[in-house]
Length: 111
Image 1 (cartoon, rainbow, N blue to C red):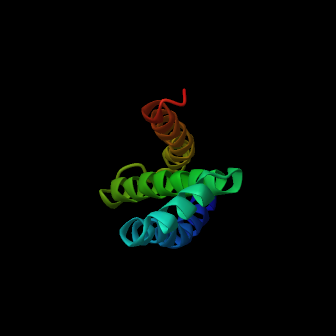
Image 2 (cartoon, one colour):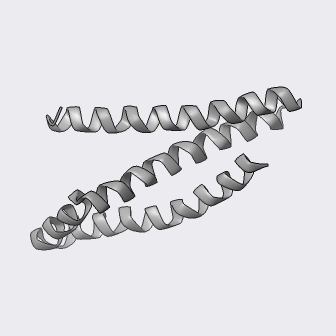
Image 3 (tube, helix red, strand yellow):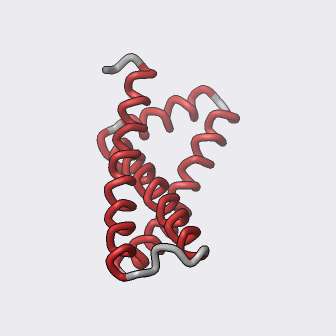
């Protein structure tokens, strides 16, 4: 039940995150000054925290969707198995988020 609620919350958070992506794309298409400003905003500690949260929400929602897809096949519906899959979704989303951020920093030469 908790994972279902979190899945819905992350889905809602993705709406907000998509607005951030759209703002970044509009800034990139408009002017160098706008692009520099949005990159500065995303580069602050608060901006990076928001982007980190967006990345986690995206990974968690994706894995939750895969979990629901598996359930649609009729597999994994037993209480014990469903609990294991729920924990795997949570752990997997954290691991994927960290891997994405490490890869991003490595690509920028920051690590």
